[in-house]
Amino acid sequence: MNQNLYEYCLRLGDSALILSQRIGEYCSKAPHLEEDLAITNVGLDLLGQAENFLNYAASLKHDLSADDLAFKRKEKDFRSLHLVEVPNFDFAYVLARQFFMDVYHNLLYTGLTESKDETISGISKKSIKEVRYHLQRSTDWIIRLGHGTDESNKRVQEAINELWMYTDELFYDNEVDKEMIKIGIGISNEDLKNDWLSTVSKTLEEGGLIVPENIVYTLQYGKDGFHTEYMGYLLAEMQHLPLLYPDAKW
Amino acid sequence: MEKDNQGILWEVFIQVKAGRPFKHVGSLHAYDKEMAMQSARDLFTRRNEGNGIWIVKADDIISSQSVDDEAFFDPSNDKVYRHPTFYEVPDGVKHI
Image (cartoon, rainbow over the protein chains, first blue to last red):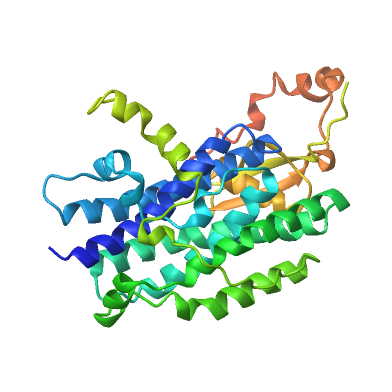
């Protein structure tokens, strides 16, 4: 069994899983009905992507399922990015977080369609269609909120500023990434940074928003197993039922 | 009562596949055309319902009024010959 490949699938699956959980929490709280359905649909797409990657990870181990990975792992065994762990403080946070991840996922999956691992390239090809739509939606919303009212502009700018420090991690390659890049399965996150920044900057400028300055940030990252203070609460809620009623079916 | 701030009301029509008619499927609120299109996609086409979407502002639809029912529709009640049912339909003609 290839431990690096397993780890690599976990990080691809975990960020999608945790983001979908966050979006799930937002169900019924969006500003209007149509948006509530739309954002929840995005969450369901992400859950599907997470399931595909976690199924693949589970298949590399004996006696494991995607559900085991989602519901029975401890916080330090998750490989999600800090950005997706941030709570839904308001609609602007939900949208800014989504926009940053959509731009990243679009670049990541585009790169991974060329992966030498057929399962990873297959899942990426399937996911990229969903992500392109997510990106179109979140881009529109950022511009819309930017040009909306003084209040919407202020709040989306605030969310962008506050979330900016979490975006560093998107472009961090650890040992697992480096091993996967070497054998042509993974891609370099660092190489995605320029494209990410130019896409994000273009949209922010179009929305009359300011691109925050890059602050050098020294934290231990999610993909190394270190998580934000929000993560424990999120997992407690997500894992509560499966832990209380192990192997329950519904 | 609080003012309705959900935006404009739009009516949505879906085409099952190319060449077939667009059928009304429901309505939605949105602030402009782009948002209406995205919402329609999310509300009405996520289960393979179709491959084409038309959206019309509800305000732009001219609708008959029920007070006109008698004058508009009753006179055709007893005129079945207006249906083309007295013709032979050639083989191979579909969707009639």
